Image 1 (cartoon, rainbow, N blue to C red):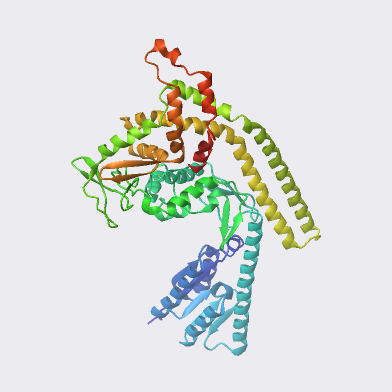
Image 2 (cartoon, rainbow, N blue to C red):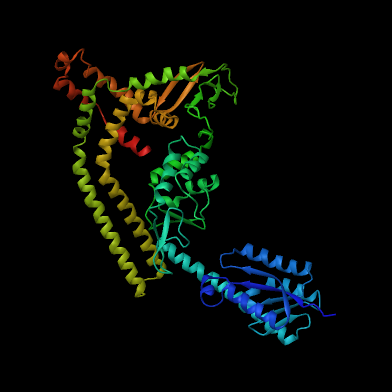
Length: 534
């Protein structure tokens, strides 16, 4: 009776992409080891492969699985290309030794090194094994050290030492790669932050919205709630790199502003006030508090109508429910109350904003020149520090410190310059828009085409919150609408609506009346603050 061939395990491993590209690929190793098995009349029982992308935990897990498989299926021989393919640390070497010494038939063949490890290996051969394990361990430790040094150097230069995050792509040669915005994906990532900042979308709703728009994870999978939360929490998108607990100022182009990132973090830290994602979202969900206990008013639907009620999470005497239409009948008049009453008033306000802002032009010009000088000086310091570092005229650490500080100073100046360039136009637009929004608020809210998200967005612009006490609503305006509450009665008193077209000219305010409005202290401070806050 012919004896069956001895079964063996083939173990292949590469630890870097460079090894794959220089003849050490998994396929090349598999071919070498299977040919060796065929030549020695072995039968391959199973092939284990570990790629360069595997983590340390994955490598350890597969290493243990291989030994367990060999033991369970009584396979006595493992074929490996070289010693450093199998193990690179003393702990794994000890595990291999234990596996070998348990059974005299067990062997590990290191084919390229023409070395067989077994229980009966001679003393001087065991010394070679120990030395090669030590060398492999040194190689691993040295490689890790070099990688950390390379990562630190890249971070000091302002670049992230890993693959590009979703919304960015890598460009440049190997070893000198940088990250730039991926124009196909970046707008969708930016939309995630913008949607969540409104307070009208839960994390799950944001993930669902961008999924419908075509956004997928960097692995081509559907965006999950946890992935969305992780991205919304990542300051990389606002220009910072967080690495091993330290914060570095990145040179990559920020995908969102710092103000938007801060606004999103504030909402993430107050998730109990965020709307819950559900098929039927009530307009006032998460927007009204109980005036007595401070709890968020809950909403339920009955016979086609929404009703709000206090859940009594804290001691509270409020009873009964308040229908949504009753809330709307109280909220809408508060929007109308702060709106310009006539088109002439709105037109005058547009001109008044520009008139009241003339003094800022000279300041902006001087500030722009100052920022330009700061940028130029920072560039000179960076160039000088690089030169001193290359010429060894100054300690490397001091040079890096100067470069980092000057780079941060330059970045702040550039950001300030960009904001200054846009500030004047944004000032006019924000100031005029808040009056116009108040003018059309009722029409926007009650429009037959209005969707819940638009109505909720309008409410978030107008009210910081609303309180309910026995069916009575008390509004708390946002900063901009709070200003309108004090400002618009004066404007509307002067710009009285005409009784008919023929009498319109007689209702035109006098120059003295218009001048009195210019004398209102700090007329427009709220518009800029409101714009920044949003």
